[in-house]
Every structure is written in C-alpha cells, then in structure tokens.
Length: 76
Image (tube, rainbow, N blue to C red; front, top):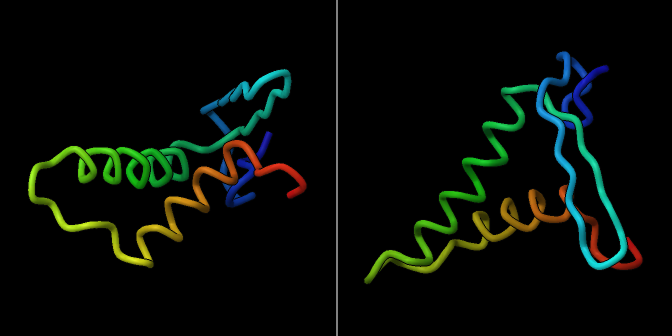
C-alpha cells in the first residue's frame, strides 16, 4: 500500500483519528509521517515555551494542513 500523502513510498505508519462518532485513517511512509509529526510537535513545543514568538502565517498554514489531513474539517 502506497503512502496517502506522497503516493511514492510504501506506507508503514497507519494512523486512526477518532472525532466523535467519525473515524479517519491515513497510511503514511516514514518520511511523510516524520514531516507531519515534526510540524505538529514543533508547534506544540513553541506554544508552551515561555516568551516564544507566535507561529508565523506560513507555520500556521502548515499546521492547519497537517491537522486537516489527519481529520478533515466538517464539510471538507
């Protein structure tokens, strides 16, 4: 099974996200999973660091992309 993000490499990471009664799944290769987890964890760490600057608009867009791909917003 190919990675659902890049479509080039074999998927080895299988995510399941539950939101209410809905369930979302994504199958990712290690490279794509590492990129997405890095974006999410980086934003989380920055948000908790005292005196850290807010996310830039580009960082916010990338975080939104990662979150929306994990569990699409209603109607999307």
